[in-house]
Each structure stands twice: as C-alpha cells, then as structure tokens.
Amino acid sequence: MVDPITAMGAMKGAYETIKSGLTIADRLGDVELKEIILSLKQSILEKDEQILFLKENLADAQRKQKQKENLTYERNVYWLVEGENKDGPYCPGCYGDKEKLVRMTIGEEYWNCPVCKHLEQHTKSNPIRMSRARRDEGWDSI
Image 1 (spheres, rainbow, N blue to C red):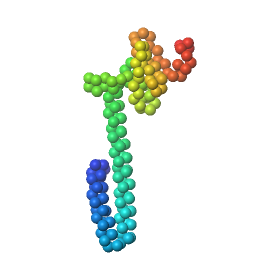
Image 2 (image 1 turned 90 degrees about the horizontal axis):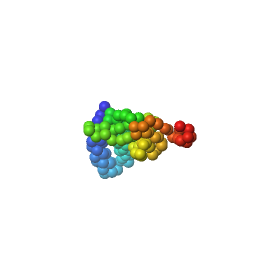
Image 3 (image 1 turned 180 degrees about the vertical axis):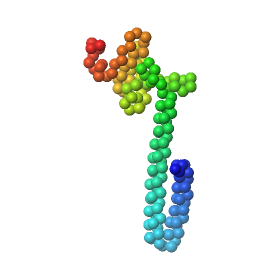
Image 4 (image 1 turned 30 degrees about the vertical axis):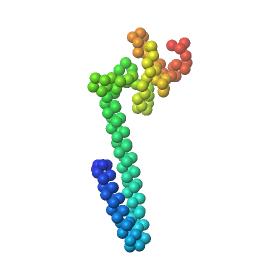
C-alpha cells in the first residue's frame, strides 16, 4: 500500500504536469486536449480528498488505540495512566456506550458524569452505584 505522504507528493507533481499540459493545449488551441487534461485534474483532486479523509481516519484510529492502551478501570471508573500521571475519573457509562471519555465531576461523596448523569461513590462508606434511570425514581427507592 502506498504511503499517504508519498501519494500527496506524487499528486503535487501531477498538478505541475497538468498545469504545463493546459498551457500547451492553450497554445495549440486544442479544446479536446484541454478537456481531457481538466478531467484528469478533477480526478486527481478527488483522489486528494480521499487521501486526506484516509489520513484523518488513520490519525483518529491511532489516537483511540493509544487512549485504549493507557486506559485502566479502577474503583468503578476509568483512568488514563501515562507513566506516573493518572488522569480522571472518566465515566464508565459514556465510555462503554460510545467510547467517549467524559471527565466526571468530583463532589463530596460522588463522582458525577455531566453527560449521562451516572453517579459513582468515591468515599470509603458503603458504595452505591446509581444510573440516571435509578435516580429518576428518587432517593427514597434505595
């Protein structure tokens, strides 16, 4: 498979060749040749867009893979660990459903997800895990 960077370099070279071809077609007054060259230019532009799209997808996949490698599940929430640094907590509900890292806010006893409203107790007392559906029933249902 061709490296996207190499392909982009080849495309730039092709643009220069097309530009020269258009100049020659203009000088010769050859309309048919000019149309063929313009069609070729359009095709190359479309390939450029595809290469850019693939590069963005590859970068996104690499970022997600690195994130997944640095993610650890501890105390019922996710943490990003890079070397000595531990970052978090991140919501297990949001990551489990959509693989989105959403930082939970820290209250006196609970970590709270601002997106899905998942609560996770972080104090040493009896841990209570509560989803949004459970909280909607009210605290009296516990």
